[in-house]
Length: 403
Picture 1: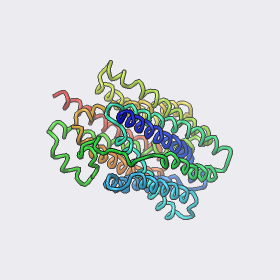
Picture 2 (picture 1 turned 180 degrees about the vertical axis):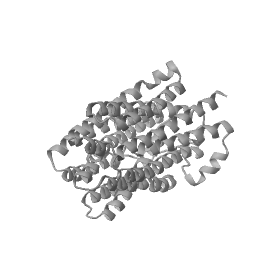
Picture 3 (picture 1 turned 180 degrees about the horizontal axis):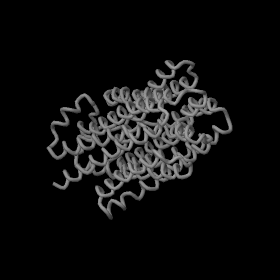
Picture 4 (picture 1 turned 90 degrees about the vertical axis):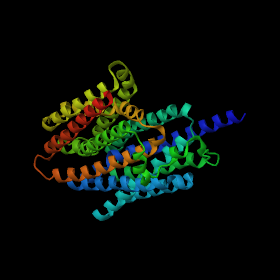
């Protein structure tokens, strides 16, 4: 009877968290599709938009690191309520900000509290699932997250064509409060942290380096290559992926609905590719698929440097986005299969931190390069260099794993 009760409790928690993911993700998708467009169409220079995005990403990195340290030491339900409310507040406040300073500070805090909510959410999912059903639950949550991205891009673009962008942003931000309804119903009193060992639940990033010393030489090298890959991709992606909506507006002056549709198609293609990526890995080998992808992607980015015909540019953009991101599960599975399970949380936390830092620095570089006459050409060229560096890192890791 107790076992049946545990299963029922687990399924209930998974459903409630998935409902939160869908509700909040859809609103965030609409918000994210048009926020930079609002800044750009209101007359803010593209370089300033880059700086605002940098503030947002620094908030994700630094406050995410802080909440990664304290997440296991406080009541998770209360923490999630608090961080989500603050995320909604600062997400709304930055839409209404009258000065560049206010916009920068509110973007920093918005990014930080949004990331904190995500950290608590993922922790709850792990704590409330067993090893037998964890992959299924996490996969479902990931799939729902991808779906909200597709729907959010389309809805954001359509609503942005019909209503004033600022009104759509405020409505989307406030509607995120609805996501707290399933969280309120979530019971955490019975959460059993004994499902995981102490080292599994220890997410104190300050202890990361002592953890790293405990790994054997092969695992250390895998982690090193993984971090180098994350940073090189972070620098490359931070130069233009975050600014896809602004790029399509600047280069082709497309409407919000068209931009939203393009971004949705890119995410949908990625989702479909990710579903079948494991089959490619089985047929050709995970590392072979990864290396092909990571070599092919920077070639596509070089094409983006010079192509200025809208249909061709859009096709290459979508293909690059899909090929790069669809193999993400292969890389994650490959890396974590070579690392002891007890160290996954701290390594994953540090990897997320490095990714956000790289993207934040890259957003500053984007702001600087857009000041040049051929700024976007330079942006794509520099980005391709970082992606070629990532391909080199993957080849090195492949040789290391073969030895």
